[in-house]
Amino acid sequence: MNWTRCLLGAAGVTALSIATVPAIADGGSLTIASTNVPRHLNGAVQSGIATAVPSTQIFASPLRYDENWDPQPYLAESWDLSEDGLSVTLNLVENATFHDGTPVTSEDVAFSIMTIKENHPFKSMFAPVETIETPDEHTAVIKLSQPHPALLLALSPALAPVMPKHVFGDGQDPKTHPANSAPVGSGPFMLEEFTAGEAIVLKRNPNFFMDGRPRLDEIIIRIIKDPSALLIAMENGDADVYPFIGTSQEISRLGEVEHLALTTEGYAAVGPLNWLAFNTASPKLSDVRVRQAIAYAIDRDFITKALHRGVSTPQRGPIIESSPFFDETIPAYDLDLDRARELMAEAGFADGMSLTIDYIPGPKEQQQSLAEYMKSQLKKIGIEVEVRAAPDFPTWAGRVGGHDFELSMDIVFNWGDPVIGVHRTYLSNNINKGVIWSNTQQYRNERVDELLNAAAVSIDNDERKALYAEFQQIVATDLPIYWINSLPYHTAYDTKLENVPTGIWGFMHPMDLVEWSE
Image (cartoon, rainbow, N blue to C red):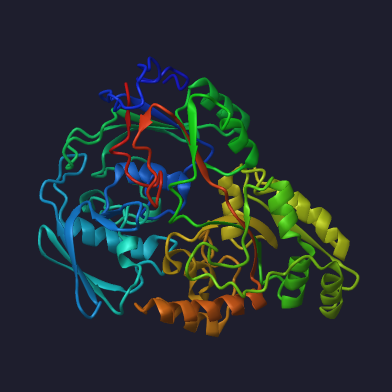
């Protein structure tokens, strides 16, 4: 496969008057540039961008969401919520088939949701699901132990891929199933080739159950680990789309390319946070005063305004500041080196200590540069920091998921609702060694558990807001994490592309309507 070949529809634009509606080209190929290396392609047992982008093309889900946060039909043509909030009935379309020709049934939906519940790192996402009844092939009734305010959102593409039971239900461990790297789904595109660390090639599903879709013939996700090479590919037209851009240099450089457009739309449900995580089980970091001292030694404003050139925004707590659940009164830990030194002395470390800090390889401006800044800044309060690089993402994930770290930079998403994306980090029952993006900080607080468990069952937004406000005040004091900034995600795309995903999940959403104008 020649990854630098010219793409269909990438040239030959017809001049259009302002009043003219662009003519649409049939089919064509789309190349998405990415630095993210997926472990595999099954979003049912793995979170994160690298897996979610291809997974949402291969697998369909019960629902999908529009840009206004409203659920839309997908595999479920309609759904009904019971008055007591303890059941949801999904009425499935009757013409959906998996890529191998097998019909999609309610048994597949039930199997998939229960598999996700047991194996996905977001344990709170389907925790209230007790059983799923399948009275007929096209009806699935989800039975809950308690109301679940985020259930419908959890049934959307980035979180609930529907897998064929006849493939994945053979008794093998879903997390290591060989079909995760050669998946069969019912989505708009079928896997043709998966070359680990290089590219993913998806072909149009000719039997997709939504008429007239997908519009494209092919999607290539081209993995370019060198950020400079990725930018050159975008500038030269060897790649058409670059989503999840998170650095000021990339945003500025691609914004000057004539044939590219930039947008910040498509990340509303993502809620991307950049933070410094503490391993609270470490003898050096188990004292909250040490964690607070480190927080006081860091200048969040310098990071966002200088290191990030003003494209990032400060983030003071566990819930993205754009969320209605964010508490404005949360302590900010503004720079105060004198207070930091006092706290170190109170904790018995007046003579200092040494720590290691890890970071995710790849997004240097948001990760490595901050780790190096931490090293210089923490030295001012007597902490000698060793910046520990990882050769690749799996190595970093193994260290942090395996609790083999002291400090670590991390990028973590809110995933639309705190039940899905926030609870997992702070619930004590989600300390799962070996699972990244769980409670890898090994943080325990009984009151936090109570508050989050109560917020997970309330369908009253005012009550949830009060519960989350108290939760934020507690974790801001305990400080298992120092929150730094929200990421300035942008998408760069060829101006000849139509219907670029700008809904709440962006490119973690089926691209069945994306097409080229002539």
